[in-house]
Image (cartoon, rainbow, N blue to C red; front, side, top):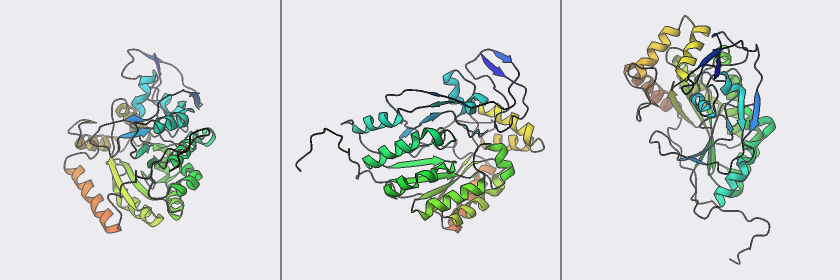
Length: 349
């Protein structure tokens, strides 16, 4: 049974309610604390690599050191995953987190398996590995230690400037083995604070791009999600600012509102930008064939229709004009090796 509250803004949080999940048949309305505290519990894992065969994704394996995300981005497509844990995709998703401290050991064991074949490992595809809890838990840093020791390629997706802490490891791995995608949704600090309440402001993220680039780390700016009717007019300016900061490549994904994300986002619109709520929702429906979301392969990451096509053309032209890359060379897998452990039999050759 989930707790639901009237949709009024909650300080420093993205969701306005603890809306019941698709699995829960009951809703119990209760008062919510003015400033809900973040709770973190540990989850032991024996395996940590997740596999996928989606034709829309550019990777076939990923690792997530955390479940839930304190960043609180209201549009986060990962919110529905909290329903599988018996919690709400609303405020629970950003206040009741699951940490996986045994993930580095599990990853090392999987990489050592004789049957393992290396391929680029994506981290940050569900929840952000550099959310605030990582500052103390350091699970992501330990995962990077394992990947560096195995010379294993990794692609990181984040909004968190805590990635700067790990520049030493990322620099050791170099452009053959790692790259970072950093998301910049808007250049408006005020809007960002409402959309992404616990994410560093856009100017700080641009500074992180600059610092990573100076260290020789390949950075892709991700203008994602682009929200039609709210942030889509900023695409060219975001790309230019990121290029000037040192980004080498760019990508863009229009807003996705799967399952419980749609009503949560609608609550947010009506509370924070009521004058634009109707326009944004209508434009989102245009992108998805009259619905707030269509999960069909081939267009769920691009949208469809006149406005979606125009947005894609604007993006492509800006990328070309700025000299940014559409695609980056594949990361290397031929450097992979299993490092010796204490007590291992050493080879003579």
